[in-house]
Length: 94
Image 1 (spheres, rainbow, N blue to C red):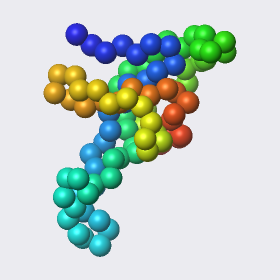
Image 2 (cartoon, rainbow, N blue to C red; image 1 turned 30 degrees about the horizontal axis):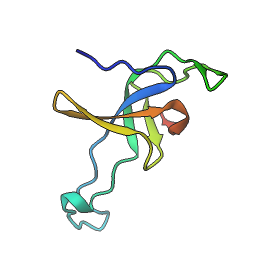
Image 3 (tube, rainbow, N blue to C red; image 1 turned 120 degrees about the vertical axis):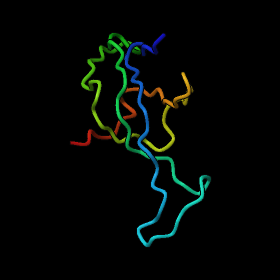
Image 4 (cartoon, one colour; image 1 turned 90 degrees about the horizontal axis):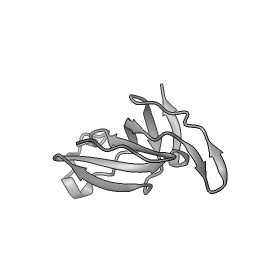
């Protein structure tokens, strides 16, 4: 079984959060910020969304920066993913 995003949605998996600050302080789990850099796992086909044609510009494997509170978090097969709209992606990391 797999997750297949619909329309302009993408499925992303966050990269690991930093466990220490730049000054070397070790952070406890709840004190860590949610990472804003993620890897694209699956991409929807695009199409008509709210009366506008949406062309998908992202592809599987892209590293992206997303809005801090964007998307819906889901757990699937013991892994954590987030489903976001392509418009919630702020930038592609190259």
